[in-house]
Length: 467
Image 1: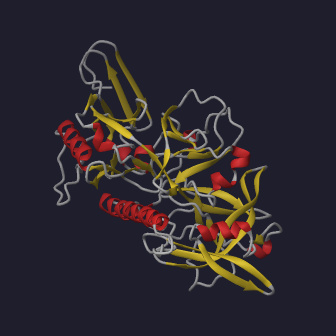
Image 2: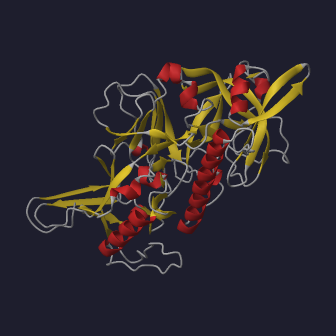
């Protein structure tokens, strides 16, 4: 798309976006957007509500940005500045890498290495939430979405202010649910928890020994309590029986007043694996932009996936939680950047809980240089860290170059403009380290795409313009 010149000119205006296509002007690699599109809207727009492809046997629930206007309980902290988002993303990325290295060492030297009982990531980098019902009768809980975690948990009553942080929704009280049951300490489910380093020993409740859980995240927040069975309501009439989750009675660290977390990783404790007998282990989501309305989380794959483009997907090293794909190329303004394919060999961890995408040094520097060259019309804000941030003050419209990522199999994904590229006026990419080092595909780049995790088929699907 381009700015208007001559021949075949098509002008489309929708919301705060202005998309202009012109044939023959040589600028098809740009999109003109209103500067208002960089601002969070104050009112939830129901007209932006979307649903996944209808030809699936699974279940879908609305998904929103926790700082967006459609959030049921507005987050108490402010939306991240770019500097803050970059810091949070780096902490999370470093932690996931250290977790994987610890897992690899444990497999190589069992009995010699003490693996920390930390199987979480960085909670404060997570941006998107879903509202589900827990228990019978169902009690609404607003949960952070995380493909980098497996164990789901909520805060449970009774819990005093020194052990639990304040949240806007009522605490889940298992005493008021007719379907709640703690998981026995000697059960196979509890033994699996122990093998994944998530157990916290056994707790006694009268004459019964209950399975304890503990998760500590990379940002220092932590939760522990009783691993439990409960009914999880996804939508009216769609109930998952015997869902395993953590009933947290003691929290700590910089938690953000959310009700809990929904784990979408690849280990046995995650929601997709627990429901694999019903939904086949597949799931998808569409992350809306901050200023938009709602996206969705869906369990199960569509019977007809012709609207998706697929690339192979594996797990990262011996880390069953993380999903990995391989990047093979990047284009800016419709032009393929000259990057040796060998520098992408480390792959990208697909992480909806990480805000910013991280690329190895060479592809990051090539992308940054090409993007800056295409944005010379706008003042670049000085940065000691080499970030690419712009001052759009005084500009009613901004012309932004298209950026596309190409994955194994020749799958090319056009990132949404501006939501999939810019965060707080900054290019939402960072340097992950040396070439062929593993990178991360963050949630900014996923915005408006339906991301279909076909775990059984070992592939990741992309569908454009889904929310």
